Length: 62
Image (cartoon, rainbow, N blue to C red; front, side):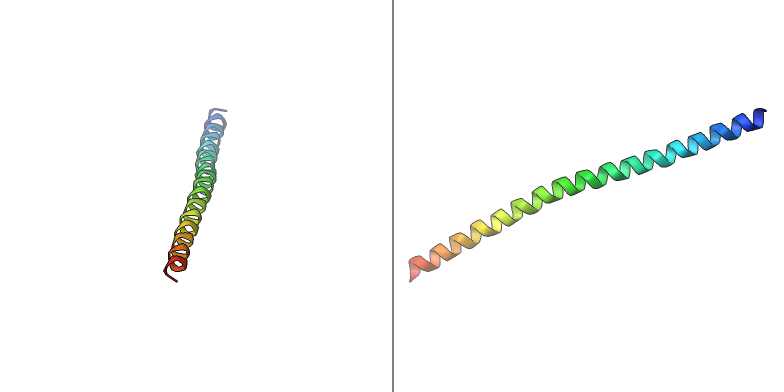
């Protein structure tokens, strides 16, 4: 009976480890996707602002 309890605890511990790693991976993916999207939008906005200012300067020089 004792070996069965020991194996059960071992399997439960292994399952806990796997689920913990999976949870950390999922959270990391979600956070990375969220802040990556924000960074991409900020970069796009900077590029648009620079492009608008360059176009404005070209128009003033004509």
